[in-house]
Length: 289
Image (cartoon, rainbow, N blue to C red):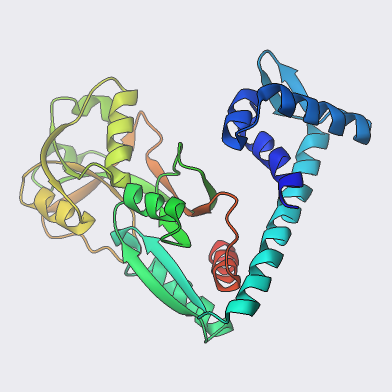
């Protein structure tokens, strides 16, 4: 039954018939005919045709919004029946980046347990790439990552936006400045997170956008370690603001210009997956904070 609405949800997300047909594993002409038949039934177009692409119009956006809710409710209904039969434990498997373990994740768990004390959590801390892979494979119900995964078949809801600053030793001439253009740093040495971590992706993409590849002196897996290495004069780094982070002595923050120096933090789950009732509750509560 869910397939009757899922094809349109996919097409609305992709806004490309070829890409949507590939995701749905159906021939492109079949998908085009299905869309044409639906538009005739509704008596209106749902997409504007722009070359080889399609773009949702006002009617299409309205229809897609209702179908997304319908698909979610159908999936929830199927899952509720399975849960009723299985009588399984009410557990939410949540993955997240290390830097969210001292403030964001505890707050989400606290809020959830205030409304439903019976929910248990299984927590996994790892790099954004690894968390995303575990969500896609079904090993995790939900993940908190940054930046938003671009290629993985996951759904996303933004939780917050963190400002990112340049972190330098307090003895560095840059520490006396209010701001620095990222392009000025092409000859500097950086301390960075290892490949696969969100902040490493942000650093690589930001530097690429202004025409250079960062020179990495040390890679690590904790943002606090990055800050400590900067304080020791090992290099400079990009670090996100955090409500609980206390920078070590000998470190200064400088505003970055020339790029959008911020990172989006969001909640992900496998696209089209039927989440359990506790996982849906966590998703709702997390995005309401």
